[in-house]
Image 1: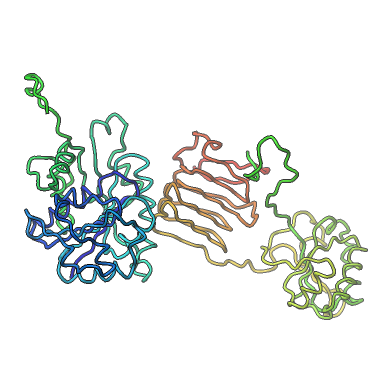
Image 2 (image 1 turned 90 degrees about the vertical axis):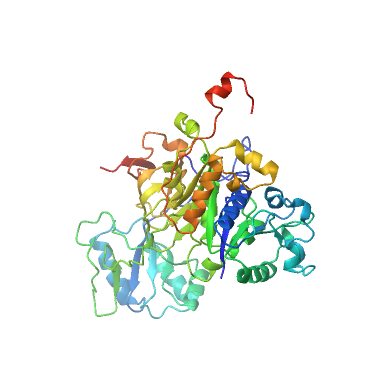
Length: 271
Length: 261
């Protein structure tokens, strides 16, 4: 019986898709059968970040509308056997999502996988609502700056009211905070909020702190989830977050963003 | 301190009126029987004891135990009698549907809700006694002070953070939040508002016109606070009390914010 986790944020561009790919890859590396679903209809990105955009034939919307079977739309990752991607349509939009359609797809996936990760679009309208509706848990992705924190607060409110769990009276969908693009130097300068400030405002448990890292952009260009990057600090942080997601207690470390080393600067090497 | 203004009016045009909430204390007179000769006699006796007690106060007749008041003609007669005694009767309460309709025709307002409140002044014998029957058992009793038991209808207590975008309305009493309130959240209460955490959004207390309502919080970071319709934004409040334990209340029709010791 799978656990459904929605990766949401409210604010756009904070790292939901990157995190969905990274957490999905991390779970697959840990031996869990995982599927990642792109709910951002019309502005799909998950397939690109996962590196399978050239193999998309059928998508989530096709399955909802009965135009294709789920097996035809699911794309198995070439590198990790436990990982599958359900991409979404590029030509339709969020109105193509229906609650019954999404529910049926989730039911089918639940038997086959251990973890279902739903990559929510930004905003609080239909797409985001659909992504969170069937969730058992939530990961709220937040950048350590005021507008992202405010939007995440809004999303936490929605998780406690506009989800199936809440409607059934089972309370809010339990949410954990994933603080992304964290730069300790800017926090020290006061340009960014520090971890305690964000936790004080949002009052939810911390899943992980992902440092700002050039490896994220590299990974997305290569179509490889950053959790598979052995060297990068962001990758390490995501792998720790995956351990915590699976229930392990790991101490939170603030890793600094990778900077050019001293010798590299002397010898004039460019990135 | 600002008053609410209609938003759609251009700044240079003249607004012919302004609307705001305001509460006045009314004197409730509960009839225990018919508005007959004995009633008027008892009323006159009371008025001679304390002639200025009832003057200028809006008068409301409580019809719960009244008899003989059913048609608009009865109410018109009552109004005439009371007005001739310089009592400014404005409405009725606790009447039946028929009584309310008849009262309306006679120019009286059927009132609902309201809270008991101590009447100011009147320290002589006619003032605060709970009412005396002058003759027999069918007479008027004036309800003053706390003769009625206060209806303490539940306080709304929240123990989870109030998130941005959520609006909480405590419609029958106080609102207590044992957590923080998000910057996009709204707390609305008929009574007082207590926040044992950071108050970041908006808090509106005493929304039914209760001028004695207060707002208490452990850390003031609110965007707007209001009591009985009179409000101040974060800008108006200024930075002196930011993030402090404060209470806000009305003093002489001005919203004041004071640190709690």
